Length: 115
Image 1 (cartoon, rainbow, N blue to C red):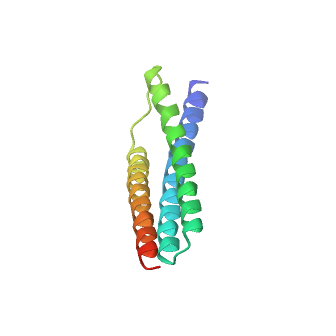
Image 2 (tube, helix red, strand yellow; image 1 turned 90 degrees about the vertical axis):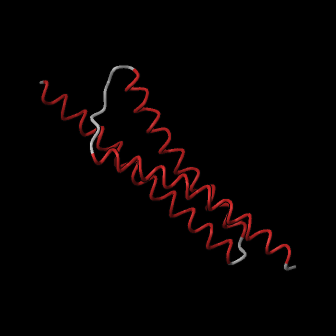
């Protein structure tokens, strides 16, 4: 019985970790697409892609918050290389999203100055 509970907790933890990796990767990809769209002068698409990136980051943030809440409640998460990797993905995605927003703004400014 204890082994089944541990396996269920491990499966749930792995599912959360993989969700962090997927959402982080999707957020970074959407942010990169926003930069490409802005470079081509399609600012509506760029804004939509930034919003899409934000939505992926919100999903990741919610998963992180759930893990932190569990930790604060005494349900300790085993720290594995995969967990560390997932956190790395999220931090890189957040940084890349912030940079993408700045680049979209820069392309918008350049576009306005050239008109």
